[in-house]
Image 1 (cartoon, rainbow over the protein chains, first blue to last red):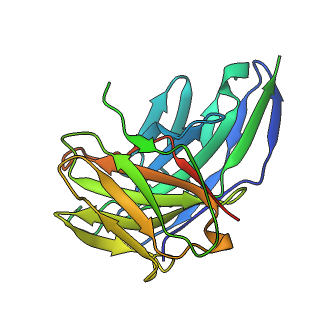
Image 2: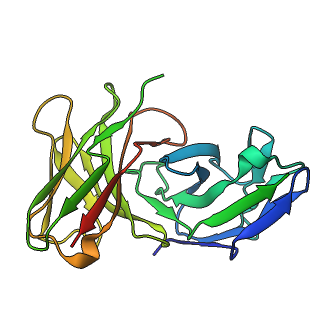
Image 3: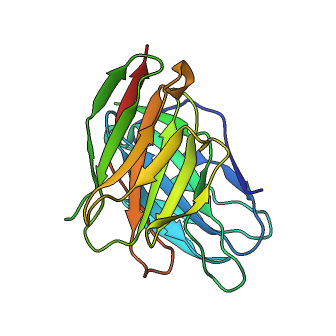
Length: 117
Length: 115
């Protein structure tokens, strides 16, 4: 079945440091890939997405590129802020060749990011 | 901006009791989901619901669980006889039928504590 593996956390950085959170996946068919963020005490918010190979998703300075050859979707940000402290989840949504899906998301284990001033 | 809402935010119940978790999805959405997150673990899919029936469910979603859309706005998850291991954060999500990447919108969650 589908699965997502994220790098082990937690990750602790100083403000303005470069961030990478690795994510690799296993899936059949043509999955869409997502990064969700969970701020303390809140639900999951979509951060960015990519629907096909070589697509780059971006939002709020975060980027991730859908790499089919390495089955990866690593999250990057050039300069993190204290407000980026949160839990980050990589997720995939499987789809068949026709592109249809009921939308079940498969999540990675989450990576806790803490950014210090 | 429309949002998914969930009630209650925190539910404490005794083992063996029935609980109903409530969700109000975004009004024009057609697909509905429940996920759960046991403390410190990954978010897990429970069930998806479309056109007034379950479209997919996980192994977790056994006979103790049921879902219902009793009216045009609410979407509920019922656990008939709660167990200690049901303690988790339960998230409801919804999406509409369009959109390339079928984006799901999540509610803030209900923390269920079974004692």
